[in-house]
Length: 64
Image 1 (cartoon, rainbow, N blue to C red):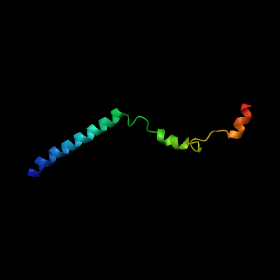
Image 2: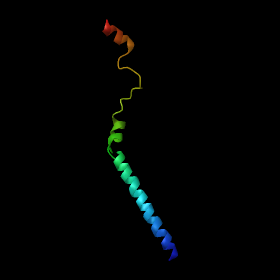
Image 3: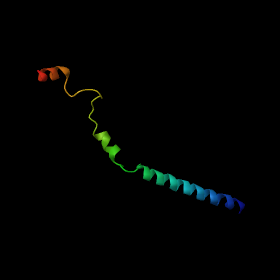
Image 4: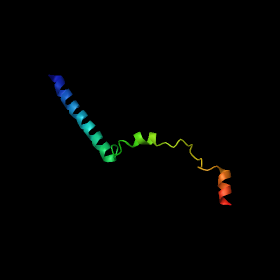
């Protein structure tokens, strides 16, 4: 019986901590875009960063 005096308040504090963390996550916007990362993988353009669409030789002939 004495252990219940310790375990019940500890479990209530744990539940309160979980509720506070979930409330903070919702308020911080953690659950706003649940599908964005899924589509980001599919929409990858497979070009390395910093590479232009046209090669420099094609770009110089169009500028002239």
